[in-house]
Image 1 (cartoon, rainbow, N blue to C red):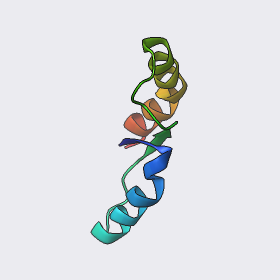
Image 2: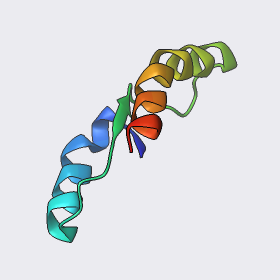
Image 3: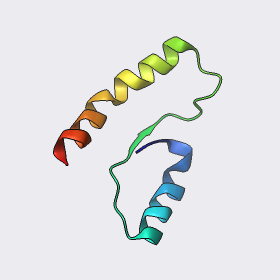
Image 4: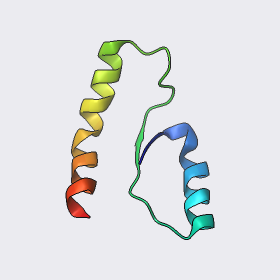
Length: 57
């Protein structure tokens, strides 16, 4: 799962509530109103973490 840092505590609380421990990559908040270049940079920064979770499971 990918979420912004503003939702870190909520995502962790939901995971505990559901008894499920998802792989989560947090990206900087906010996402809206970012330029295409900024979104691309965020995605590139998170790519290795996301790829690692996909291949580890």
